[in-house]
Amino acid sequence: MPYTGIGRPDYQSLLSDSDLGSDEGTLSDVRTLPPAPTTTFKEQITRWSTIIIIICTLVDAIIIGYLLEHSYVDADLAVHDLEYKSAFIGFDKLYKNKSFSKTKYEPIQNNPRILTQVSFREPEKVFPIWPAMHPTYVGYAVGAERRLLVNRDTSTIAQFRVLDWGMENCTLTLSFDEPKVGVSNVHISNTIGKPITLDVWKLKAQKKIDFSRLSWTTKAPRDHYVGSMVAAFGSTYQLPSFACASGSYQTFEVTCSQPNCEVDTTTLEWENSNLYIMQSQTV
Ligand SMILES: *[C@@H]1O[C@H](CO)[C@@H](O)[C@H](O)[C@H]1NC(C)=O
Ligand SMILES: *[C@@H]1O[C@H](CO)[C@@H](O)[C@H](O)[C@H]1NC(C)=O
Image (tube, rainbow, N blue to C red; front, side):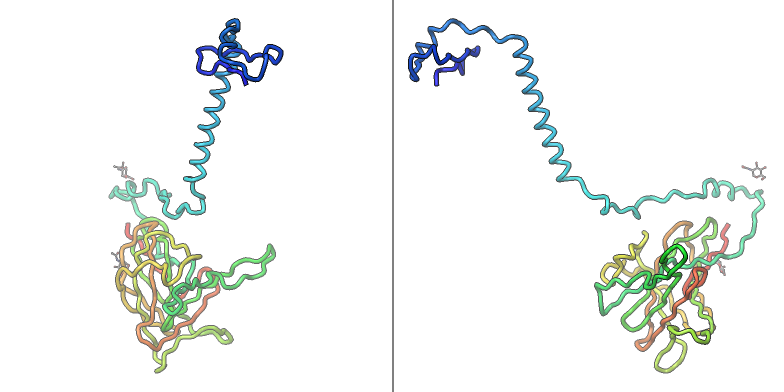
């Protein structure tokens, strides 16, 4: 190939084949050529546009590559960690006014939405939250089943979100009806046949539990021992009341107190649970 002018201030047009005597065009041949016309404005524009487009393409590719590498999928976003906005705006100011006439409200019953289990023997096991689906006229739906299952290996986890505002005196309650005739899957016993004692622990869970991942290994550690409750048919047992902020999560683990104990009861209505919190008025 002939010398093309690389390294010289201006480009020169290539020699056409007819101008070349042989393949071995020498530097002296080129030097004898008439000076090449300077690049036109149009060519300058084309050249610089091409350079700019290439640079932009490279920058875009780098940015896209970076985003693909560093962006994360929304599934990992901890939505339950997001702050709750209180719906009770201005209630605190209103109730601070001593001349404001207050209404007396009856205590309210706060049932856990879900009662589920964890097992010491099977630390990885996630118990099914809704074991049974029921046919309804619009399709299958979960039933209002809450199972309180406590035995040597298994404890029950209950999480409550404190309802309403100014009902911030909570009392954990364990209550059993007399067993109904023909209802199976209701069982409270120990080897000596006496009412049995269950221990209640407060868990260090300030946030909503992800029940689809709850197992012995993933549950929050115990914070402190709350007290023990007696389980017997036809009886209601309450632990000492405690202060519970509106909207806060209260999470408990119920375990057996003695080695030989077995509680297995299931309630079937949304408004019924064997374990619940009574909230009474504090304003
Ligand atoms: C307190 O309530 C009374 C009667 O409801 C009202 O007249 C008064 O302005 C209120 N005071 C304040 C500081 O809001
Ligand atoms: C909380 O409620 C219980 C009854 O449910 C009551 O005995 C207790 O005095 C109340 N505590 C406070 C601080 O209001």
